[in-house]
Image (cartoon, rainbow, N blue to C red):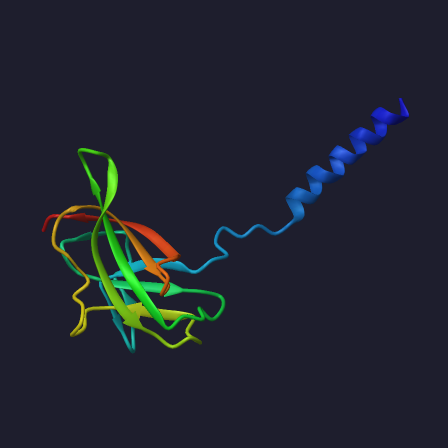
Length: 141
């Protein structure tokens, strides 16, 4: 009898400690999208669904990313095989102490989605290891 009461007590403590503990949905850097980044207004038109054209990729973290040479890579879903396939890759140099950065059209890259579809977008470090990723849907104009 004592063993079953102790067991029940232990289960109750475990259950309630699980309810009280803090749970964070995202503890890694997050990657998301907007139409553009404005120095005064900030992110303009944040979404995960856009029409074809140029977009801005945002990365936000609670800590310094510690990266300098990075890549933004697009993989597009192949509707026939139902697998993501490499589409484009862009190289960037950022400051290692950055925790909030945007990647937009510049002279070296266009960050343009030319074709409708479902894309997986990655922020990769200089060893092509994934730092952050997100899905985006591109539809026709």
